[in-house]
Length: 199
Image 1 (cartoon, one colour):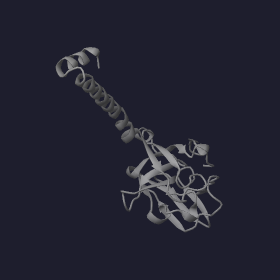
Image 2 (tube, rainbow, N blue to C red; image 1 turned 90 degrees about the horizontal axis):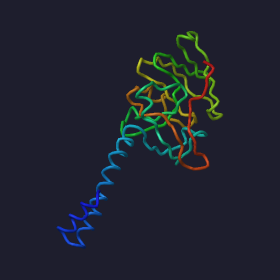
Image 3 (tube, rainbow, N blue to C red; image 1 turned 90 degrees about the vertical axis):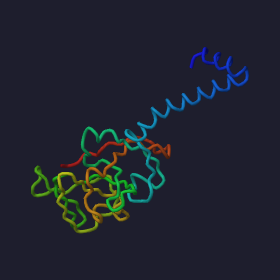
Image 4 (cartoon, rainbow, N blue to C red; image 1 turned 180 degrees about the horizontal axis):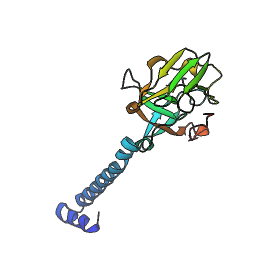
């Protein structure tokens, strides 16, 4: 705000009240400009997320603070290996964090502790090698054919994870974004990228 406004306020409301009103108007202006910048970023581009539970150990621990990138998936689809935050299919008010294992159109089979992926490149199936998982095997015996808008999501700590083995594939519209940055704790801060696979 310019000095002429302060002078006009001083002339109208007096030498004490004029500068106070000028200060209040400046604060309101700063708050409005900040809100105009921060709110779209917070609701459409990035979002904070607080890890709860042990389902993603040893890669993400309870109480870690993450930043979720919501923008990338407006221009591309989730990739295998990316860690994503999504709405729990049985209660959309809850948010879960898991890793993308199966992609739309694929068949995911869990058998003998292994994950097999069936797709155009591997019609007879191929065992998915996962260096990021804990030492536990993937329990269960499941075969799931994914629709064109579905993803198969699993926790890295398979023994402690409520994931697609229990609630099935997750629709694309339920995926909020990918884990981009770990902010806290500071010694573990960093960014994330999808791992490379043998597929």
